[in-house]
Length: 370
Image (cartoon, rainbow, N blue to C red; front, side, top):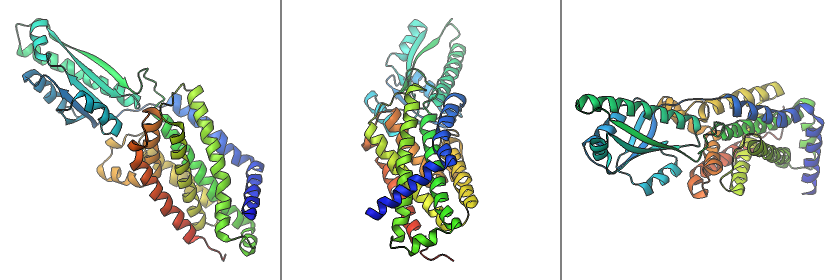
């Protein structure tokens, strides 16, 4: 243990002396948080919704059928109730819910207008606003068709009450914050860890470490510990920027958020160790870490390009990207305030990925250099 602590201290010295490493670790998060938080926006299709139809009459059936014909909305259920809707949102299986009151048809007949309620998942502000626009267009078409079908009626309107669940103020930065966290931690942890070990090979100091009384496995562990601690400090910096610069409220457990982030950091470190074992130059390690990890994180996580828009093959392929599961877990805990019981699947998948990557890294670690 004393040898391990001495080696860890040596690694900290290396990190703090290397300005490029410090710039990547602490400069990159600040720039990306600001750029992604203020500059990006996106839209989506194939939005899964549920309908609570309390009217269960001809007019409500026509409205639901009208919604089903949309190319952008997918109606999962039409017979849910108020108490079930929140559970569906917590599970992350829907993006919106439409509530049709019992007096829907009678209000149309006697008052010339009826009222419905639309609830959207505000943790994805761009999707939420897009859903609202889609429903506004659907309601307009429904009103026009109803007037044509009822020539004697002078006016017929649907008055909708719209609410963005988890994001009442409509903060557009919410959807990008968890994604940027996943992107930063994936790139920084993976790249810096892989480069640090390959650097020892290039400088010829790895031979000294391997022939020393220090166990080879502890070399990997000692290399990873400084980056684990620095990444947690990095994550804390991101949270501070998120709260004070972007005005985003952390709704869930801070402890659970740190636990999920620690697990993801260990996953990224394990991947970095594996990359370092299959490369012999810093350029190759950096290229694989940056290009090989950045593009899958951007494409398959879902915070920039919605996964629902992709072909089924790519949706299945996204399941092997660790950042996707971290993104889903952080969004649920941080933005929705959900507990571990709602993110256990993401946590379990990240744990299995960590065990697999770490096992492969240790197995492929060469105690003899050629």
